[in-house]
Image (cartoon, rainbow, N blue to C red):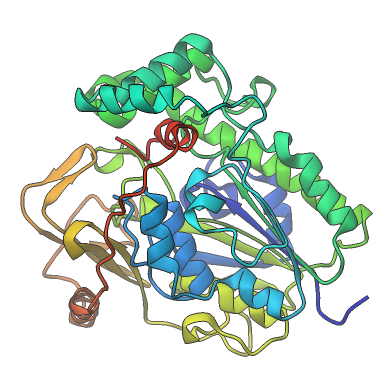
Length: 451
């Protein structure tokens, strides 16, 4: 036994707050999370550090906005971008924690440098029946890429074969074994990719009508590239998304029961998402690194952390690492950020979101309790092009979908902070010349990270 608590972090990939029932959604997508929230601490206005898994987790695990760019899904780029940072699991190891991480997301795999600080790190990047000895698929992808057909072929293959995407049940035995055998204190991190598009939960978890697996893959390709084709299919796509959230909630139910059986039912548990997803709003499906609440506002619920209640003001997940280290009873605070727990938590007037783009350009937002101001540089960001740089402001209390740009009516102090954020010097990290192995490349294409 130890005086330090075991700590569990569950991250849901791509879950936006307004599709979580605890946050006012009309459907019961998260019954387990709702019960935990009843006796936990709920943050109603949590904003991610960035949009995109590695950029967001860089911020959450280091306390500082990422300098890596979501436009460069290259292992060398991200290893270089984060090489000078000390990440959360490294700090926990120094405090005597046994650390374990489990997920299926290639962008935070060992090859991208995310295995630092873990005693056990299972990113499931390689399957036993995968062979990359010949490099044939890699050469085929390179050829298809010249004609902008590589992603089309990947999606066509998945549509024809009908193989289901990875699900959390495939790694449950590893997670259960960690809980049973890990020496105390332990830190367990699970990142569920089930809620990432193509949004296909196992059929027995389809609470709302959605397409079959082959049609799901076909519409997954179309919705991200040819939005005008979606039309009346949108409700079925929303159903599919909601089904994956409900399925992720089933994982939460199984996890909490397992923790209880093993005697860890009172261990601190934190549930959150790394970013949201667009479902046709602002001309996009998925999560291009835009600055709207559909992709920046996420759920954040904590239980067994010494307090309960609701936090309504703007909250940044840049503070997540400090919060976990606060629970671990250590003075380390990544990025000199404050814990989100009582005793350190401060009522912030605003929080910031930032994505680095090519050539040092940035997308950024400053989020207050009522207003949000944001900046998009010129470019074609998904289905919505920006023919020139765009300064936008939204009165969030009346316009939660951020449809009415009210630039000029916003508080000037938020604009000042936005300009200050954009003027901060950011170290430019080269895109990286390292060749991505064919299996990782296929995983990234399936997730839509390589266009």
